[in-house]
Length: 113
Length: 113
Image (tube, rainbow over all chains, first blue to last red; front, side, top):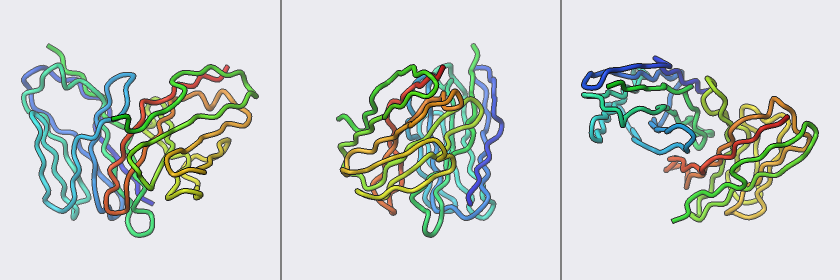
């Protein structure tokens, strides 16, 4: 059974700084997803990482996937207040359960002026 | 574009009462899911469906039942609500085994007193 672990769970940053959120998963996962959730809102898909070495970038966020290390990272460059949210990674199961996503506990990011 | 729609958005129940949460999607997706979100726990899968007429248990199915009589609808029932079921419930859908990106509804905030 796939287990997904994120760290840190809480992250307080200053505007302009860089930081990385880590997502480790326990078994083979065919795809890795990153979602964003604003307070009281639903989850919004940010990135889909499909293969080893995949890198995707959108604005100040960049996600990467290393399937050999079973690790995905979400890198934040020059943080701004608008990035404050909870970020979840989710792994797709392999084989017969590949349609189920298993989520990490989320990283609550607060960007301070 | 409606996407995934959940009703109701808020509900307060007394212990022992029953209710049904409705999820409707207009994307012709095969797979549908019910998750619950609790502080510090991430999203946990309650039940899911891989097609019309099918349902299966997820990680935390006890106290819940589901039905998928029509492809576009996935119902979550609480037969006898308990305070431990106070949570935010999210419905999601995805299209196929080769595209497991999940699209989420806006959530239902349920309080059981």
